[in-house]
Length: 630
Ligand code: COA
Ligand code: AMP
Image (cartoon, rainbow, N blue to C red; front, side, top):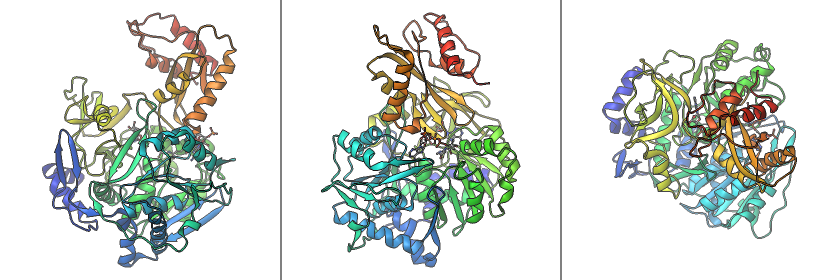
């Protein structure tokens, strides 16, 4: 069947399409129907089925005789180690870990926060939760204690599983003090913490609260897989919204299994037994879906890579991993290739490795600029497929369904809508825009299986964030257009979310931090273009009347404050004290005009501007920071 036929078949009968896809999953009780319309724009998938994610990702492959196949390869240039874990080993390790968690009181529905670097134990912790029907929430290691505390208070975990440390090139990330600080700050306290001690740093355990990863598993009864309802939450993943309070995206169990399994062949074009690699981090959605769950559910070998595209030790690392482990499909963010290209523009390192097993490269997480796609395609000789998705959806909204039919690539477009997504381009009044015209990108409800049914404990916020602007549609927060061939073009966010090195960040969240500085009266943070990371945050602050301190001092404090409160991942290093912020007469800060100045673009000055002269001061501030860049 062609892509057009598959998409049409889904559209004609979505229920039959997803029930058919659901047959690839092992159910404890098969669902009788796919979609449940709960009314009021809320939906559930496979709600009457009973299923276990860990069974589908691990045990069933052992039962099917695949136990000796490698499930996880840990390739860690930062610790100079390599390790392989077979499916049967993984099953045994996860069953014991789950048994130990159960012995300490963790049950179906309990939340467990996981704060770990790129080690197989992070996946084991996720799978152990899934085995019990406990709901995990993985927090990215680059976030500061405060961000962890916010998540602890929202998810109210019974347990936290953490590692003693993470390893960034040139420094050890001390997880334990961050964890202790977060628990101290949080109102909710977990019953206990499990600490995985790494060789690079052994952390001090808090008596009565912390247990050692190995010690607490000693002699416990391994746990069996606990079947859960199809719409039981599998996990919560916090993501940036318009304010500092992150949104707890809920992932439903049944739809997640069905949809992810479907994508492995149809989008990533791999068969069970083949090696699949997503170079991301378990703290992000790409890591949840494509380092942990999808490859394992589909019976592939997944790679947990603890390193960077460059500097660990050189820009040939990606190609080494691909060649040594015979990777078939490789997935990363465009920023990673921009980093590689900067250090190895002629592709010298690529030529050193045998990439004959690699079929294709997939990019997502941020806009893929044509230069990067063309360079990667040119130098590797492999097709490069951009695809567009979000934490909220957990899998591709628009992509190239190469397992069905490789659609001609149009560089700059993530290609076409996947089955399950009825994508529309809408004007502000909700009417549909003609092909070729820019508008808000929305998806007609219901969203397909695996996508968020709600936000954790925040149904009103869910409605307000996604459902109210365009009744009957899910608002993606992205703007773009469709062309006459049905190809999608993603142009920009419609909110103040920015994308820094493929990491989604909220400028509103950074403004909240800056505003808490005692000498800051007002502030604005905008996303400016960056050649390597795509975007970088740039802050402007106005001092409180009467404060007469050197501007540079306050600027340095502001930079430190954001790093301490949000974390190094915010990459907030550009900050300038200015006298005033440009505003409209009604007091709205003109963030777009400020970003345009920093990007060296034509600045459209709104007629409603309060005082155009203020833009000149912004220009001076921007120029003092070295912007716009050549
Ligand atoms: N734990 C602690 N700190 C972390 C971290 C983690 N897991 N991940 C990143 N950080 C830190 C970095 O050390 C850096 O700190 P610094 O300011 O002291 O240098 C900061 O957070 C910013 O990190 P990042 O923006 O990721 O940049 P980087 O310096 O680590 O380099 C590139 C990353 C430029 C090489 C980039 O190409 C890249 O690969 N980014 C990651 C892409 C990715 O995986 N995106 C996920 C979506 S698919
Ligand atoms: P995240 O939830 O972190 O995956 O970020 C999702 C956002 O990243 C999307 O809403 C887009 O703004 C952006 N994004 C992700 N993939 C792409 C892509 N292929 N092209 C353009 N933007 C993308």
